[in-house]
Length: 176
Ligand SMILES: CC(C)(COP(=O)(O)OP(=O)(O)OC[C@H]1O[C@@H](n2cnc3c(N)ncnc32)[C@H](O)[C@@H]1OP(=O)(O)O)[C@@H](O)C(=O)NCCC(=O)NCCS
Image (cartoon, rainbow, N blue to C red; front, side, top):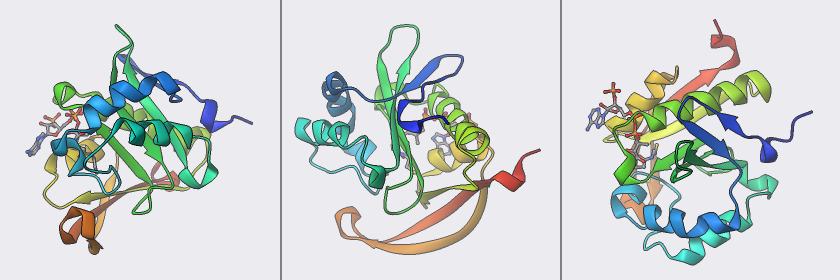
């Protein structure tokens, strides 16, 4: 039986691996950017180094689901973060450093993690919630094989109050 907290998922260009304490500085440098945080329900802002350290420190808490960092295989640079479960708003979450956007990394990592969840962990359904204006993330999910469901509202005081959220999901039964 695989322990998802120890799982390493390799794609053509990326390695999705368990976070380590020395990842905190690189996480901090990317997540402190409001352009990254504002599209997430859970990244604090302002973001301090201690937020990254705490996030990594809680990585094995089952209440937090499974958390990975994403590194580029060619130079081992951290490019983003991805997780399933425990985000509070929906199951599947990710963010990438702004310097790394537009290169297909989110699609590559999201596809691999959703495949892993469904094929290996046998999760029946992976769900994601996307702020209505976040067209890039909606596109990532479409490319990763998710289908769109209803749009719902949620009050998130730290993200400006009432927000409209598009639901996407990929289910075991959708396997071809
Ligand atoms: C959303 C995010 C993860 C995308 O990462 P990325 O590595 O740039 O994504 P990819 O390169 O794999 O794909 C992005 C797709 O969105 C498209 N896109 C980007 N900006 C867009 C926009 N404003 N409108 C429409 N499509 C857009 C790109 O063209 C690409 O689609 P394509 O391959 O069909 O051309 C990244 O921008 C990010 O971390 N944002 C902040 C945090 C966040 O939004 N997290 C997700 C919360 S649900």
